[in-house]
Every structure is written in C-alpha cells, then in structure tokens.
Image 1 (cartoon, rainbow, N blue to C red):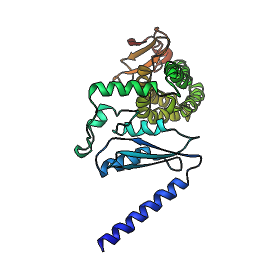
Image 2 (image 1 turned 30 degrees about the vertical axis):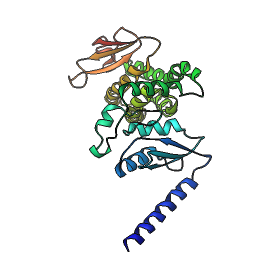
Image 3 (image 1 turned 90 degrees about the vertical axis):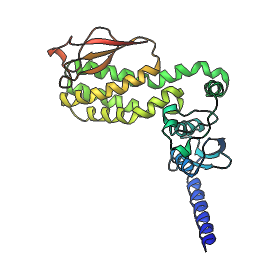
Image 4 (image 1 turned 45 degrees about the vertical axis):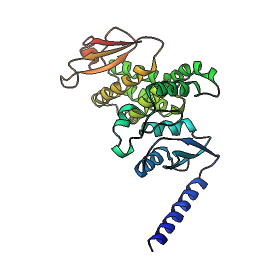
Length: 286
C-alpha cells in the first residue's frame, strides 16, 4: 500500500512538472551542476530558481545536477543561477555569498571548493559572463549603463527636496521608479547583482511612496531609507566621478540621516533653505 502511494505521488509530481514546463514559451532546457545535499536543498534551489511561466528548475540531489527550462526571451541561465547562488548554493558559474551559505541549515552545508578553486571560479564566472572572454572588459560599462538612469534620477530627487518642492519630488520619483523597474539584473556584475537583490524591493517601495504624494515631510522620511540603500548600490558600482555620502545630525528627530551628492558642498535635502548647509561629508566614494 505504501509503495502504491509513493508511485502515485511520483506520477503526480511528474505531471505537475510537465504542466509547468509546458506553460513556458520560447523554452530552452539546460543542465548545470548546483551543489547541495538533501531534500531541503532541493526545495530551496527549486524555489529560488523557479519563476511562474518563465523558469522551471528541477534539481537531483544524487547527481547534483539542475535541469533549467526557461523562456529565453525573458530570462537567462545566468539570472537563474544568480538567484540560486543568493539562496546559498554554488553552481558552475556563481558562488553563494559566504554569510548566506553559513546561515543554511547544517544538513544543507555541502562541501565547498577550496579558496584557490573559489578564486578561479569567480574569475571564470566573470570571463564567461558574455559570449566570449573579450566581453569581460565591457562588463563594468554595461553595469554602469544599467544603473545610470537610477543614479541620475536619485540626484534630481535630492535637488528637488533641497528646494522643498513636493510636486517636483513626486514627478522625479516617478522617473526614478521607472528606471528601477527597467534595470536588467542579469546584466549586472555578480557583486552588484547581490546588493541589487537585497535592496531593490525597498528602493522601489520608497520611490513609489515619494511619487505618490506631494507631502514634503513624507517624501523626506522615505528619502532616508532610499538614500541608505542607494549608498549600498553606489559602493559596489564604481562610478566614474566621486560621489559624496553626507550626513545631517539634526534629521530624523535628532538621530541623523544621510544622503548622496555629486557635489562636495552641503545642500541639505531634509531641511532645504531652513538649514541648507547643516551637515558634513562622511565618505567619498570613488
């Protein structure tokens, strides 16, 4: 009886996978090694890689091989493997962040490569990111281009807040939200992609809140967390020109708040003309 139940469950699972794959248009299927140990790993890997009607991942714990089926017009192998890496699982191309791997359940902590092998894998993943090794040199430019509109709109928003112009802040923030939604994360370098995955939800939420009101106080409240996450992005993006991370001790009810500026001169977005020069530069990002 138990064996019959197992057969029924296996058939049901197979049918569900078949249906999910059949719903994917422009499908491409590839097999890639992804490290892991157990059934919990299987659940985590497949959950991280799956996207409804776009990508389906089936991982085999015995062979350590993942079968990726995806819509090649909407995603890519790299994008799927990056999501899996961010869930804690190394693949042939991308390594999981150490802190994420360390937080996996004990039974899921597979044997990782040695330091030398890890360094070689990181190097290879960057070289193979494009169609051939020569594309590696172009990757940083591609990455900056992906985020240029985001940064440009952030700085325009900062200037609107300096002028205490709620209407303009709302308008610019709509553009900021559009530029955030336009980012193609599979074209970001791995280190930038990891930060993007951690910050994008809050970045979009803050931009949306600011765009949805002309209340300058509400806008400034969300600009605080927007600036905090934007700082994390700028730190790994290596912009062509210096960016100044500035701090006002009076903002946020006396707790202080930061913002980013293209100019070293202090122009306070939290108080505008009331205390225009209140603050200082605490870090210069180059």
